[in-house]
Image (tube, rainbow, N blue to C red; front, side):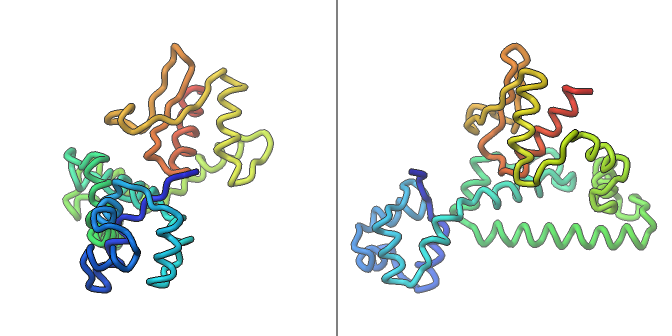
Amino acid sequence: MQKTFIGPHLRRLRHERSETQGMMARALGISPSYVNLLENNERSVSVQVLFKLFETYGVDWREIADEDGSGALADLRAALQDPVFGDTRPDLTQLRAALVHAPDLAAAFLRLHRSWQAATDQLLSLSEGDARAINATPEAAVHNVFRRQRNHFRDLEDAAEAFWAVPVERDEVYVALKQRLRDGLGISVRLARVEDLPGTLRQYDEARREIFLSEALDHTNRTFQLVHMCGLLEQ
């Protein structure tokens, strides 16, 4: 059974009700130390506690259990790839800590970054795409081209359509890519723990004919990485 961690949700719930960990522990029939461990994602929550949360606080435990934070982690990693942040970026441990201990701050950061992107797009539009108008670096200028095109390039779209001999449903692309790599190139795809891929999200072992994808990647980005590898290996 998959473990469920609800740290940020539990802490937010407690703060909204102005309760101490001891008060919440008494309400749920557990120890204050267990509440502390749950809030820091050092223990997974039991089914009994999930039901107790529903009975005591009216929390829909099914929604909590379905949220694993992988989407927020991927959003943070993507936002921090923006050249505006330079070369110094938080590592995965720091990002996960931010999501656990300061989820509202992380959400505010993402909203701020999206607002900055929108303002930059508007400024570029007014300056007819001249990146110098915002003192952009070359990396930022390239980044802005992609945003201005809304990631749509006709030649690439045509090549993408030709990539598949037989059309594939959107939710089957990842599986189809794994099969394409296995059947066409004899390459298998495996998921790897974050600590086993320090400093990277993907690794190709040519000798073993294996592609390793970090478990930090969400489904969409795993698919992207496999498409990228197909492009590199099949050209």
